[in-house]
Image (cartoon, rainbow, N blue to C red; front, side, top):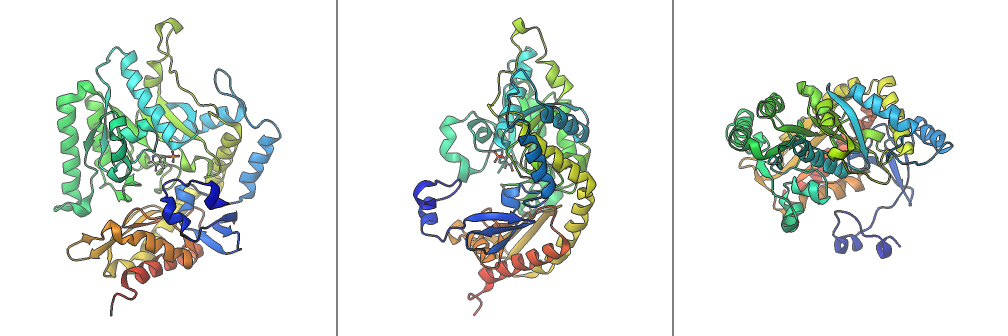
Length: 443
Ligand SMILES: *Cc1c(COP(=O)(O)O)cnc(C)c1O
């Protein structure tokens, strides 16, 4: 039935239909159980969403309670209680200055909203020339057309090129491939940004960035100080800064938001994924009073932001997001992430010595293990080797789920994972990597 009726995202169905598909029936804590009753650690937080685990009584209860009141009512010109309470909470925890919350239902729609807001912000101020965006190499901001236009992963995005609006692309500071390491990589990024801003800021609306960690591009971690410098340059040249915190938000990097790690306050911030603890599809675009103010006018001035989705501000989703944020506080999640993150780092130290492991990139509980054909020359595996896919398949046999990014094996466990669970999961991670990169080929 699965093979007959479903078309899976980011999946070559011909491969899938020849595979032994995994069908999940239930979840409990950080484990998922398939229809055969086999259990797996959720080693990628169900694609980077899950925070407190699955089937969490407090989160279930929040949804049930709200369901007894109303499942959905619109936010178009009216309000509902959980949407109001959550907006207040988000403003309280967000980097300072972000005082307005615009809801949507996925990271991609949150990004669409941010780029449309940035564009119309300048339009409303009478600066119609400021209409292009700066993005970064290997950026991923979601799969709708606007989000793909500011995306820069050739494998996902090239085919759609004729449909997209053009963006300026600057390098993400990737130290590993830079001859002078982190400092050189950071300088390349800042120089490219400075040149663009000094010569073309009159036509640029905003810079969009995955702060501190670039996710789908391969879990690339920025050198310290880079984000702060980028933010300062944007401010100096009157270009808005959009922080896409869809992957990094809600504790994933060891701070509530990655921007907090550098004390950066963006003009627009997009959150999604972990917002509801990974339970329901709610996203939000947060804006400063200044951005909001450019839309605030008499109706006749036509400065309204004409954008909305049917399920914007869904009460069930907002209720579970509120319950999730309550657990963040009660369970000291942020301190937990910092402690767990150094535990994982120590556990993976030995893996670094293996002959086919390149970099192990980590920020908080966002980890990518790069597999290389040759450690000395840092020659990567060919995509046709499907090394990441094979490592993930081996991990599944050993009882943990993950999904690779090309030759990078992703380990993004739920923040609630205990040290014992992280211990078992890192063992599986290491064993699966050693098995596929060394097993059989060493003799
Ligand atoms: C996942 C992701 C998105 C897209 O979110 P969806 O909910 O899948 O649309 C956008 N930006 C970043 C950084 C992401 O990791």
